[in-house]
Image (tube, rainbow, N blue to C red; front, side, top):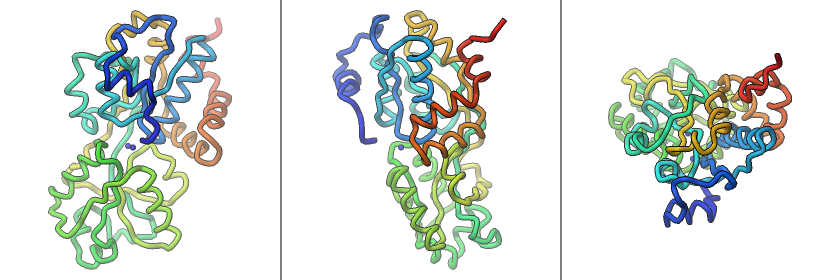
Length: 290
């Protein structure tokens, strides 16, 4: 639920507004994404299929969340595949909902939460409320390991700190990579930690983690992740829009693919996913036989 490679195309388009709102048919389809592992996999999977199977060039544009929503709403980007709704990205979506089109849901059952390693006893930490215990606060050093300042998970986690009156705690604003580095280091030493996290994520394939309860519901409930497109995208690129509207992955398949990407590369994991799921891919492309 995360930034370094914002391209010249986005800088020119989103920030200077130099692109028209209706991109010509012969131009590459611009798909924006933020540097979260789930977004990277589904975006690169879509891009390969659009290029290889539909014959349409694709330009991938990486940036932060706010510019993604702005870019699609202005027509500087054609689409994004990572609108976490109804709660995580509620603020961003509210500002652009009348200027974008929702093509479909790429996966259901996404969730946000705080995790601890499974070696932390449940009788010590079962819920966020347990973080108030003096001995627990000492073991955690008054830290909640966080991600990017602009992420919806960060906003909700800041609210959770207030809702649960976690005095003496600080949400460590960092990045997905920074949070994961801290988690990896702590697990190697079997140290206690609590970290902001989300599903789907490859970290659940690599580490033994568990979500802790959120009785106040500060971090929201199950989410769906939608594909948003600029207005008129369906008219300008009907075949690509139809493909994106049909593209839907089971969360379990996505997490396995994300873990493959960490072990190899996103490109290799995309190739493996396409090879391992021919019927699913045919359905997305409407290449059913007969």
